[in-house]
Image 1: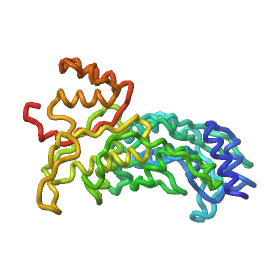
Image 2: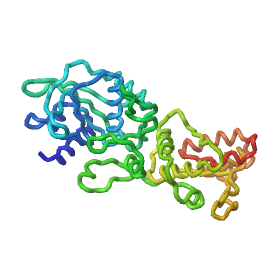
Image 3: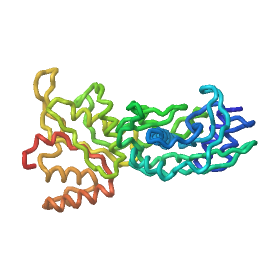
Image 4: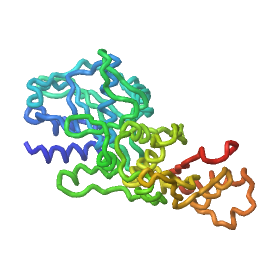
Length: 353
């Protein structure tokens, strides 16, 4: 039994959306299930219909979807932890696919196109349930939890804002740059098994200032970065405000998040636009203020002009335009050139602005 060859075969079946005995024939050989779970499949003895179990299933599905796609096989019993499994079968007709899709919408804000069939299998014949989870397309952003889920003992199943992925037989939360870089890559399992490089997304164009000017060494704030990443998958929220007293780290957080988007090549944007109203910045090392390298706006009009300039408009097109005309042009340009825009230091403008 060559596990690498089985993974390659199952990966191709996942990509084609196969829901047939062909999948079971790959995972059950000589009457025995392949004695391990991995990035592509998970065994369950039966389908549990408790609220907490729906949340756990939704967690597994989100992890598979963000990674390579995969299968959950119902009716396979674990007889020796992580070493031995046997076919047990399930009671037919108990799986509620529509409710499961509703739970995915509840916890992750999307009704994923998961599919389920029940297949008579083996000798003596039993019923095996097969749930197919597609692989997330490269051009679609990762899904993240929109709310927290707890088990019956109030122990956290996953947190709000968590972006989950599958590694081995575990569901993990993306934390590091490497995690997010993997999630925005081609996620080609065959390439990984053969020791070849993943195809990475193209790096995004940006006008970010030098890191040394903003924050040479960024530490912590992992939870905030995770929630910002999750926010990108929310189709109903186009803006996010970072608010707090001066010196709390709003600008470094925004900068670090932009670096994450730029380095992973998040597929939602053509470019990153950094706009600041700041004219000077305090430097603790010299105990004094220094001038900023560039100031982009001072009020709403100059802000809109800056966005238009960076999304394709020529300077002479912007002459003598009213605020409403600039708003329309900004909206029109951003439809053609989707951009992630950071508007830094808003509170240094006049109150009316």
